Each structure stands twice: as structure tokens, then as C-alpha cells.
Image (cartoon, rainbow, N blue to C red; front, side, top):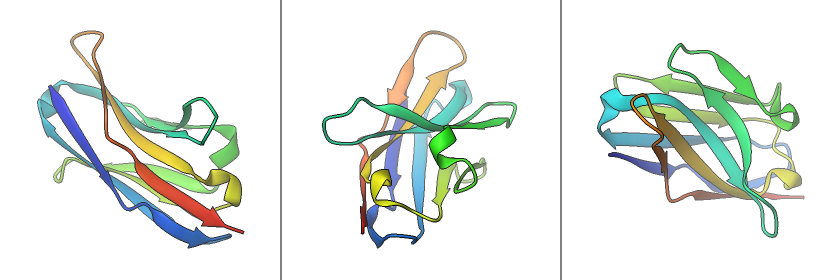
Length: 117
């Protein structure tokens, strides 16, 4: 089992920046890829950014050039640096991890990001 706890959300103005953190605990060795998803009110959860075990990254088109995903293995923490935020980035952001050894998926509780216009 892996436990994920997000932090760093909040209210920011249009064009501002935030850094989200996701602290992982439990069976850290079993983690394969990690990433961030988001869900806005009335919309489906969507992928924002993914970081593979081989440290390759992928981003949704709507955040390319603005968001950066990274990981600090010594701290067992995943980050999402969000710059040039827009009101349409407003959503609950969820940390995600999947397992190397089976079809197991882990989610954090989510952190609210609100961008005012």
C-alpha cells in the first residue's frame, strides 16, 4: 500500500504561481509512475502531468510550457510547479501513483487550486 498526501493548493491571481507537493509513504519501492490529475466542478478528472520511473515526463497540452513535474526521491515527494496560472486551471488537483507489481492505483485526497480572474 502507498499513501499520498497533497499540499500547496490555495487561491492565486491570474498569472500567478503555486507549487503543489505530494508526500508518499508506505511501500515506496513499489511505485512505478507518479503524476497529477485535476478535476474541475462538473467535469471529468483529467491527466495534467506524468513522471515515469525512468524519469520521463509527459504533459497535457493545456499545461505545456507552464507546469513542471518533478520528484525528490530522498524526500519521497512529488512536485508540480505551476506558473502562469489561468482561471481555467481552477480545480482539485490529485496526486497519483501506480504499482510496479500489479494493477494497483493510489490517489491522494486532493488539494484545491483556485485562480481568480
